[in-house]
Length: 320
Image (cartoon, rainbow, N blue to C red; front, side, top):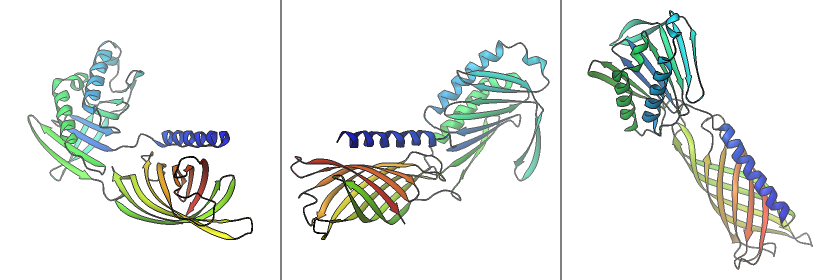
């Protein structure tokens, strides 16, 4: 029993560790802001929570740090890289030329300087000409207003927001990235598995019907019903089948649609019993970890109806 418990804990920790490793900073939304055709701002959003406050505080901190730096005026053009609570770097750079579309016309803009803030929940790039431009109340107000407008939109797809400010007037637009996004879907799987239950190997075939839902263009939540038919033999080599009906939930720990990492929970009940391998009224609980596209590992615990008989199991599943 102790060995099974250690194995269960190890598999769970491994799955969580892999999930953390796969939870890269994938852009959820993008915000593009143009102010009076003299400042260009691009924001890649990783996490919307407290976004406005984080950006405002980081710009304010950067302002005080830049004010203390006397060397910035030595550069004709420069690039500022600021990582909040870690570091700031200022180095000479070349001016940037941007081609922007305005009412169907191509307009060329030259920016001497750039400032990049690499926050935990976002990445912000400001293109500008004068240092004082990025610390004005106007810029702060425009960013706050733009972020507020994006918070009102709760699209489940990656979205690009565009804001063009000219004085107190502005135009805005929204582009939803549905072309490459995963859509809500009904999933049907079949498969087979091998398990170790009561220190005995046992095989099964399975079917699964699931519903998967999208968040920012990536499948994140799955709810499913599955059926397992186990095959085992008694001492006289007589074959018996026992069937479980299961319900489960999985969450995708990765934000990369190409490299999903599903972890979930599953509960099942014995609906068809033959032989004496399983007790009457047996049910099971398990942790389901999909380690590859068609491979899953499920540590399980089985309970008899009176809860007097409890034993672990481990299933390795193969889908098709």
